Every structure is written in C-alpha cells, then in structure tokens.
Image (cartoon, rainbow, N blue to C red; front, side, top):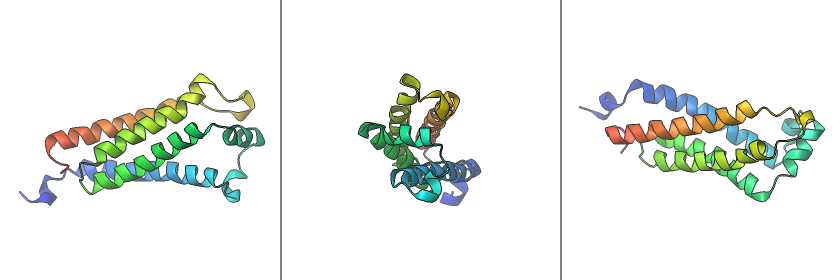
Length: 141
C-alpha cells in the first residue's frame, strides 16, 4: 500500500477543521496579547480589564494551548507522530488557562460562558485522543 491509500479521509477533514479551530484560537491569543486595536476594541471595557489583569501563568497557558493546537494540527496533517505531544501540550495549556474562568469566574458584566470553556477543553481532549488513536493504528509515523 502507498502512503496515500493508508491515510483515512477523516484525517484530512478532522485535521483541516482542527487547523481552522486552533488557528482562530491562536489569532485570538496573539491579537489580544499584542492589544491589536481592531480586535480588542470590540471587547467590552470590563472584559478587556479582566483579560489584562490575568496572571502571567494564565497567558502562558493560553499561548501554549492555542499554538500547541496549531502545531498539533499541522503535524497531524503531515501524519507526524509528534502531533500527539503537541496536542498534549495544547490540552494542558487549555485546561490550565481556562481553569481560572471556572475557579474564579469573571465579573457578570463580562458575559463569560462556562460552557465555552468546557467546549474548548473538550475539543483539545478529543484531538489528543484522535492523534493517539491514529498513532496506535500506524497512520502517524
């Protein structure tokens, strides 16, 4: 069998959607971190104040989670087994950085949604599980 026939079509679909999902998260992180005015100007003042008051460990976790997901998705599309490690870092970063919104919720006027936090962590966990499954099946090398 050739490499092309061994690659399940689902890898391309899931990998492509994952790259878009994580790419948006990485853009959101980078634009917020750099205080990119066209992006952050759409946030309510209370949300901006909350975000910029987050501790350093939260910013690090957010960056690792977002960029780990982008790297993991790119590696998944390249069928590289290092996607598992990148997705593991992404999950750790996502869980760590989002823990603060569950443990110490933002003010009510910010309008944070804890369901979104759970969705973000859940998708990171599912992508890690998928990459691990592909590695066990020999699709990632």
